[in-house]
Length: 282
Image (tube, rainbow, N blue to C red; front, side):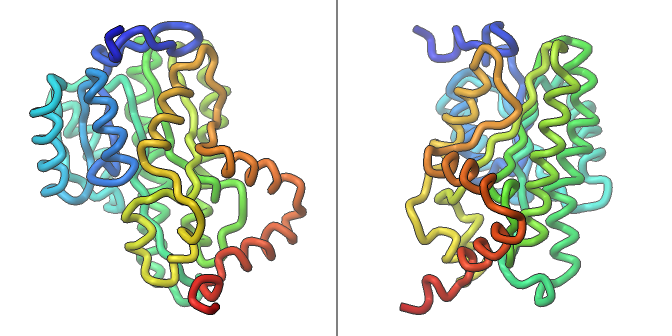
């Protein structure tokens, strides 16, 4: 069977990835690059967005050599004011009709709130909360009018728990999760699928870029970017996908267990889990 055809989508319809043009943020590495490779292999056309133009260009050239998908590249820093609107304008100017949106870009830091630079925290909010909302507002009307399309927001298991030392990052993921669940309910019956995928610790550059203390976040067994993409696309292809899918059995069990804790107990527990001394002191 052609791997690009015969996949379920939006209440029992079939995903023809060859008919999709997917805008993917945070595409230059990690989960974003894994999404790009998998979707292009299935025949989807892609609009790749990230800050690092050199990496985007290299990835686009790789995908063009390996597939017959159309690959467009738009370097953009979604932390900038008006960045999402400028991105929508650039897509429109190129005559592209986006049928899929994957909000994967994220900005994070690992340090106590009072030791963090406010400008960096503001960028985390812009990239993790404001930009996905503005991009959804820009592209969803066209999907709804065409009764076809999907939005995948990459949230995190951090959306379900307090995140000491990552207070703002965790808050953006909680926003993403709540926002997505509400959109899912509002858009039922429109032909547009909306859901959040929630990874846990994943083997990407994202955590290593936060500094040595962030090693505590990857002290256990890690999932891979391909694991996350497989979880997300399998969920997309379900007959009636729900608003949230958590990647990995251990992560699913962790999220379920967290619901048994009081908010006080959850905050104290995660303070211990995110204590850098867990991996620096033996």
